[in-house]
Length: 229
Ligand code: C5P
Image (cartoon, rainbow, N blue to C red; front, side, top):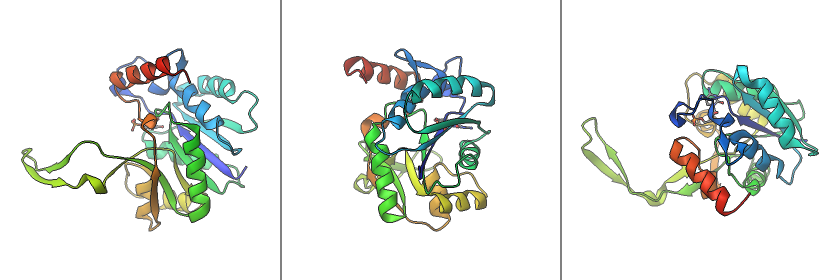
């Protein structure tokens, strides 16, 4: 394959309040990680899949990965993550085969992301050589506030997007940007853009929301109950 997908699942997920890291929490009968990998294996294109897991859960992640891969052509491996998401992605990048040209980085916590989004992102990177990120319009009015919570300004939401994953990049330039990064960025596209590369937004999907709080987990379970996936 020329496409690599790094699924970062090494966070502790303390905001979820569960007794284990959130990718390993049950979501309507299967783990969050297994549901994410189902979408990855639903891609049209063959891919090398690298799961980044907490060091003490690598063996469990390997079991989940094997189950999700089933008879899929794509290859899958598991590596240990780091203290920050950025370090975890960096560990995943180091595990990619030499032939990989396009890399997608995906949060395991976005368990219900449709498979088609992965293909859309790959197509976008292949066509533009830019970074490609899925995004959705912002529904709420967004205000900038000062330290005392006084409103400074209302930001025109028409020009804002909430950014999701998978985020896709040409492999060589992402790897170089990671090697040079000196601060922590909030997403891969910010790190990539800071290295001087263009990034474009494509249409994301409401189903790609990130499971962060107990309420998000209930929402995911409710969606699975009403439309089995
Ligand atoms: O904490 P947050 O929800 O922003 O994490 C987003 C994704 O990054 C999650 O899937 C989480 O498992 C992953 N992550 C990681 N390594 C870390 C922190 C977060 O793989 N050190």
